[in-house]
Every structure is written in structure tokens, then in C-alpha cells.
Amino acid sequence: MPMLADGSMYTISFDTPTKTLIIVTEGFWSVATTAAFSAELLARGTAARLYHGRFVVLADLRKAAIQPLKVIDALEAMMPKALKVTSAPIAAVVASHLAKLQTERYLKAENCRTFLDIDEAKAWLAGGRTAT
Image (tube, rainbow, N blue to C red; front, side, top):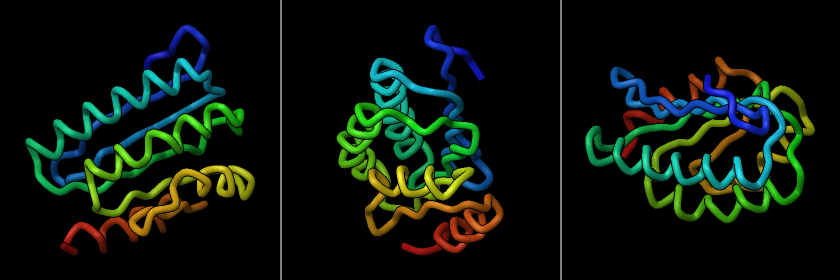
């Protein structure tokens, strides 16, 4: 996972066998990190859709810090664009109830769910891979 100048981290990868875009985040983010993440996520998501078709998203946020309001606002502003890239299930996994509440602020579309257990998230995504 590459470390950015402000000490935060994220990776975005694609698992072809399961058609899953995997996001892993860590640390405390700045607005600049959020902007870089959003641009990379939209670019990689669009490329994945063009190359692989429909895909699900698994965001592992368990090592992320509770983020400042400006970061959450920036993620919330990015979501309408992200939701145009995929209408398939998007699952986020967090480490605490507070993080779950924060994540649900920007992941609030019908195809989005936030979980405290990664196995529950994966099971939910598996059910959505075959839906149209």
C-alpha cells in the first residue's frame, strides 16, 4: 500500500475472478488525499467497467481513522459520479459503530451497505454479483 505525503494510505485494485473492485484505506486523510483518491477511483472504476462489465465494490475501511468533516463532505460529493460507474452492490467494512455512522453519511444509495464484519460484506456482495 503506497504511503502518501500526509501519511495516509489507500489502494485500489481489481479482482478479475470475482469481478470486484477492492479499495483498502488506512489512516487519517486530508482533503488533498481525498481528491487524489476520488480521481483515481473514478478512473479505475470506469476502466474496470469498460474492460470487465458489471462489477461489485468492496471497501475495507477497517484501518481508516474517523475522518474530518471536510473529507466526508468531499467523499459525499464524489458519490454521484461513482454511482454512475456501477449500479452493482458496494460494500464498506468498518471497525466501529462510529465509523459505520460516518460511512453511511456518504454511502447511502440503495446499492450501498456498511458492515462491521468482512465475511458478511463478502456474502452480501456474492449475492449481488449475479443480480442484474
